[in-house]
Image (cartoon, rainbow, N blue to C red):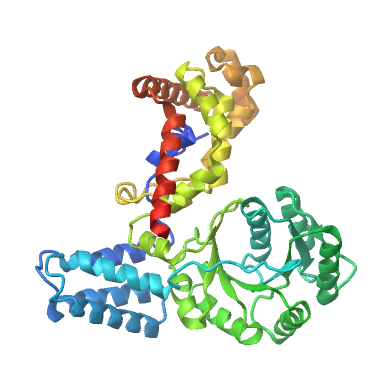
Length: 484
């Protein structure tokens, strides 16, 4: 049986993606506690007319506590807050018109951005082919990241990648990367009988040269902890392959331990950048905040969510905004642009105007939402409403339950919601393992949503498709201004 909160989510996401983008809220997970404590630190300055050494002391102390609580090394937290204090006091006689709380937010935002690297750093895939060596501990998400990176290079960079299965120890590792390759349409080079990862990787590079692949992504073996055997193997791979890019994958949920492991790997293979995985997990954020400072290497990618599309270039400035509860509207617009289909939007606009939006249309919208990332990831990006729904849980599994209901319908029923009588609903309930009450509730909410969309489209005149196009143009122009 579908519970009430899940059906509330259904009604929330039943709008097409154009409307969803206007409604999703800022739900933070990874940095929830840190954001709250930083907000408390800024509030301690509320009411003060200017920055002074006295009124800033408690605020700086609370910021330091917040960082340590987020699993940031104490030394880093101390240096960070000393810099903030110095900069805040340096503005004492310069920006008297700015409220102290606002000034502190700006200073902390700038320093968080610097702490995480300052600006985004691209991946080096030059070469014929370019070779990307992926390293990390077992369980950090190396294989999944390799698949996501291949998909990223294929869809966003128009490259022709080749995945290479060089984890010759972990049971089912080759099967896992093979499944991921099939899922994204990227070939996988594998040699199950060969237990020498260096030979496998070199043979894969020759195969790539012979068959016109642009990039070779080598997924390597990991261990549960740093050990001599693993370090020798990854070192031998790097020496033999001379990769254009070596990336170290960090499980964000391991916090400061991840930073220590990153340091150990860097001393052996001197990698080019860090990848943070599982950012959507229940973690305090210490790895994201500490790894650049500790290792001196940039964070290049961040991964959150299970689908192959959920890999993003890491932008320190945008992450700082999200930590401070400001959202990340630029990234959201970019995601919308990637998935926006103008032809599909116009088709939907016509159907909505005629009040003919059906369950097949709804399924297509769910598919677009999934491609943009999970709901929690999207919710992090809209500023201003996070506090209102701070304790509301949004579960992507609710989408699965909705899909099960719709897939239990016949093609005729999906295209004509109005024909769903009691006998049809009973059959649908049996097909998806739900109660009649669940089916009735879902259909009722779908009908309400469809009527609302029809009403809004008639009132606005311009239509959802044009509204989305306007949003895209506005987002693109804002991003151009930012680049200038």
